[in-house]
Image (cartoon, rainbow, N blue to C red; front, side, top):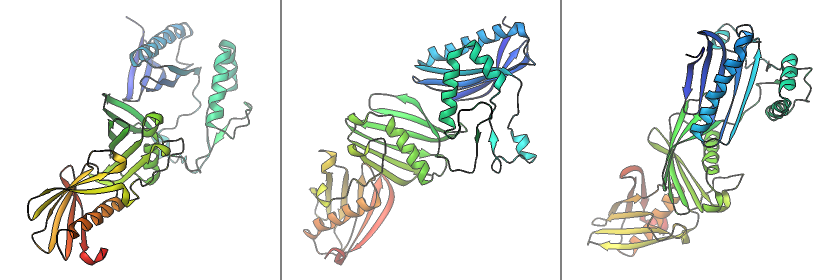
Length: 364
């Protein structure tokens, strides 16, 4: 039986933290984050005072086997795990925060021990280049000197950080989980692919702000080849309500993505009378840029001068688009009957989510 054991401390879909034990005694910790079929990165911190010198090689071999098993299981293409063996400088924990440690009011530093770096460079010169490149990327203001520790302050705004994890994938459908920097699940995503058109819904577990919606949109778009996608439609859902719809065309699927309104021209729509049952009319609604299939069906009762009806959308679009479609539908109703008002209910997946009321003179 091996003398090395890993004791799980925390595990999520995108990473894990393990305590490293030698003969059932804590000697360090290993933190790994990973994205399947892409990359593993992390750090192994061995506590020098707790790890017997003769045990170091056995511990490293066991850790190497664990990381290699993850590489093989997830088919990752890149792996970078930084290993240090030294005394702990300090630990940021909830205990320290409760006793007055206020990270938001102070600069905080990271541990760059000169002796440790010299030793690492001597043992493996190549790893030092990778390490310094990582530091420069994380701390652009650092002058490159190891005589003084680079410092990062917390009085600046940071872009939202999210990690995208594929939970299942078929030819026409992809399901994702989205995690924040604390590895908390913040959203679940269902994506459907129809040829060159991609659409889906982001089901938020927390109420998002505009920056978070933009960050998640960019993350999802980046997972697709922009050369193979013509349209990208994302519905942001919070507490079973669609709070925003992002619509992108092929030209928008570039490094700097901007959500734009694709339905901005009356000529892009066609309202066709599909069935006439006397006082009950059925219309199919087409959008030129969405091909030959209808994007919705309108059913209207014209038995009274106060006309009522509903429009069942394949995708709900945004408020301006729906109002435009309702106005076009009113123009078609003008051909059938004189009326005083038009009350229309918008449906998505057979559930009402919006109601509009028009007076007949609004368009005359």
